Amino acid sequence: MGGRVGGISSKFYAETAGIKVSGGQKVKAGTILTREGNRWQAGLNVNGRSSLTAAIEGNVYFTRKKNAAKKVITYINIKPVV
Image 1 (cartoon, rainbow, N blue to C red):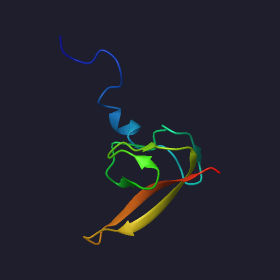
Image 2: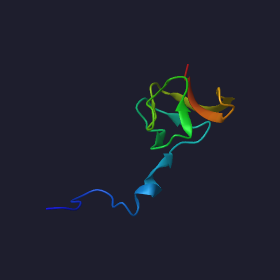
Image 3: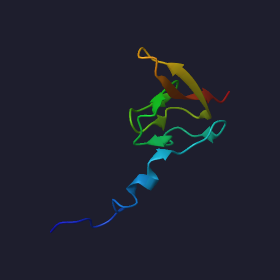
């Protein structure tokens, strides 16, 4: 018994990956910010490695920094709502 029973087929799987929020958007704790991507890194108040989630409720903002290899990395951060 092979094959998939439910869920999404591999043909359309790439469409579901990527960034799910934009800068300035308000998110709740536990919201998925990205899926299956190494282009973004977890910044302040963000959990995860390849799939990033919000640790707290707040507004999303992005920062860009160079790492040791001089490659520009985009960090996803969350500014808490006061």
